[in-house]
Image 1 (cartoon, rainbow, N blue to C red):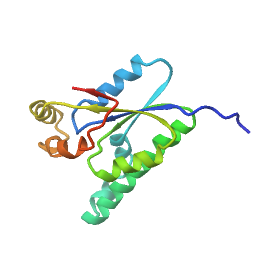
Image 2: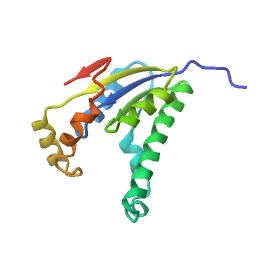
Image 3: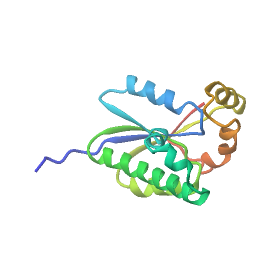
Length: 155
């Protein structure tokens, strides 16, 4: 039997699409002492077979997305429970996502970081990226930060 290891830390970066979470996560991996893993909800979505997903009706597609995000939360918690430090990149744009994270990460050390960006800059970044529907980030703004409580915040 393997010896027990203490759980790792989770740095949860929450912000709208194009706010800079992934860029911040990449820099944290450079700056933080010890090995950290960057786990992004976008990376989990990219693992899904797109061709099959596009053929689904809207209700089924939404359920697949919900299960993907719930699985992401559990994967992050599992990695931390195995002793790994995680930088988690997420968009808490639905209330259930935060509740689910709180439930599955109970007992783990989580630093909750709000990543904020001005609406004009969000629009500029979305256009430059070309892989997001313009206006997506602005539509997410109200819900993503609705809880209003962070350990740290970046603008």
